[in-house]
Amino acid sequence: MDIPAWIAFFMGLYSLVAAVGEFREPGTWAAMLEDFEHSAGLRFLTGLICIVLGASVYLVSPWRSEDWLSIVVNVIGGLCAAEGFLILAAGDRFLPVARKLLGRSTKGWAGFSALFGMAALLVALSRL
Image (cartoon, rainbow, N blue to C red):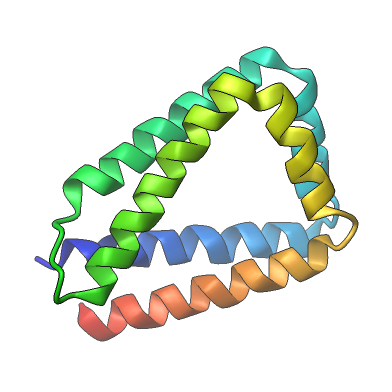
């Protein structure tokens, strides 16, 4: 069973579907970040979910130095967990920066998300 390929497959689906949602209703991502800024409870739950998902991906995916997909999946899992720790520790300072980074160009970020999703799906399907 190729665990990194399956993780890439579901990451790709997530990324592609999130992009479709933003394209269908522009401004959703910006509104979501604004909600996070104003809700300590939502920040806590989001940080916790990021830690759990990131750590799960990192721990479940085997580290194989000869397999580039394994390395990429592990790095993404580690970054997701780190993001969760950052949101829990300093979400009130981190999320305004994220919202400014997102800016008004949500279509550009959604396009990047769609491209990443398609690439991850193609890579995953080529190995499954």
